[in-house]
Amino acid sequence: MNPVIALVGRPNVGKSTLFNRLTKSRDAIVADFAGLTRDRHYGHGRQGAREFIVIDTGGFEPEASSGIFSEMAKQTRQAVAEADAVVFVVDARAGVSSQDHDIAKYLRRLGKPCVLTANKAEGMVGAAQLSEFYELGLGEVHAVSAAHGQGIRDLIDLALASL
Ligand code: GDP
Ligand code: MG
Image (cartoon, rainbow, N blue to C red; front, side, top):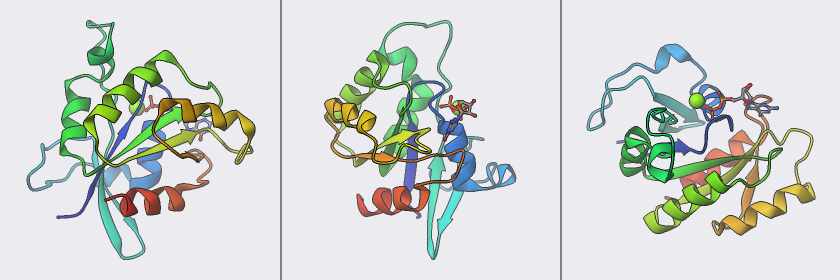
């Protein structure tokens, strides 16, 4: 089975934009992936000869509006459990938030391969602002722009190499 990569992060950081960038087509989303829950948030990605499955997350439950387990709602935690690697998306422009810290704590405990990804970083690759994300305790921060298609190939290389 192809490796599974889950996109995780607080709302509005660009997970779905990244998902669409990685899977290229919304039409590819609905498919039957053996062993995984059938869900519209799954998509096929391909880089060269390497194929992978991406899971978009973020269906947090508005009625349960506080704490880590509302942010990382059931669907998200299930996606993380099914994933071989996690791409943890943060917002390069907004900087580190308390929600980022909560999610980072959850991911550090989980111990799965995790690529810390600062999205919306178009025009700021290598910028000093990104250094604050090291405080999340997940190592290197990788700058991408999902909207502009920057840093995406390297991101997938990193995620697949982390397995
Ligand atoms: P999600 O809630 O994490 O799934 O975030 P979305 O993919 O829905 O994106 C939230 C907002 O951020 C939208 O307005 C996107 O257009 C915007 N966005 C996503 N990626 C980028 C990016 O690379 N750069 C910038 N500037 N905006 C982005
Ligand atoms: Mg989304």
